[in-house]
Image 1 (spheres, rainbow, N blue to C red):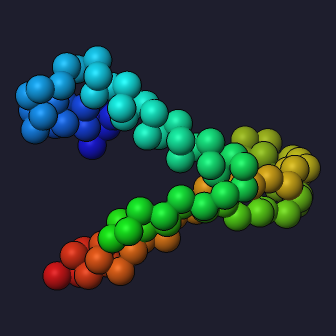
Image 2 (image 1 turned 90 degrees about the horizontal axis):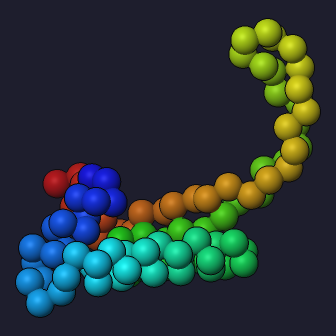
Length: 92
């Protein structure tokens, strides 16, 4: 499912809301998650899962085209841990 499909589904389920209103709600929702993660926070949605970040150390990588070694800087990457309810539903 892509973002536009999510918006259309929410519009169908909530006929009192316009497409623009639903798009704004979805944008705010995702912006808040990204904002919290960028502050090194955690976002937990009960029954769904938790978003957080993990640190990756700097390392020496390899350019796949040339085989040349390149330095890869340390960085934070997003991490998702599914909730118990999601794991149960996926494994039914």
